[in-house]
Image 1 (cartoon, one colour):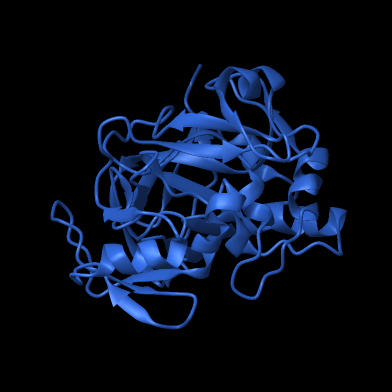
Image 2 (cartoon, rainbow, N blue to C red):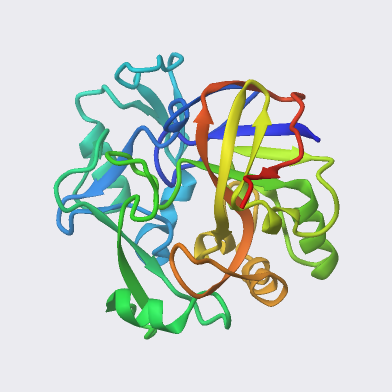
Length: 297
């Protein structure tokens, strides 16, 4: 098996960077989700998981102006706005520019603040998540009646002080994407919809990641422990770049691959797998990836 692509996302929910080489630290890909946009009225981190309010964030892209250094403060990022203009995170007027673009009072931040959370909308697609989970976490409803959960950042992950929703590393195989494409040939299963950090090829056939939680593997110069399958959300259906809005991408996952996840409870629509970093190291496109090996029972 080989690494076929690497990605990081300097600003949470904005489009990110394709890398040829990445440094994997104990907090994931160096520089990943280093910044976030904070809604100052609600104290919520902006996330395209609530499309009515934040889908526009997928029209922004961000890249570092210099490479991050492990243990250091994140370097500035250059943000390309939907109109093609560019602004740096260290520009004096960056918060005003972002607020004007979103039509809301927002700030660009580099660490969660007290009480900072995020929201997630549950579209009318059967089988996405356990009904009890949705009921227990619903903070409000969209005008359409769809439930919106209020969730803590990093609630199930050992990554305090970061902007990750659940885990610091997301791995996806080309096998899973190929399996989804075969199930729904007219849908647009582009890897960009799923925002992985590491994409693996030559991994087998089918939803191979389903068998990896509890196992560990060396990827390039790093070693990871796979934790639980990646639950998929409405964000994967949204238009971004040259990709159209396509609800069938999520509807197909909910039909084809529903997985029990003990860490959060219940059965979820999944594609990919989350991981924690056991041994930091360098990973490059083309590096070998060993078959995951489960720890002895």
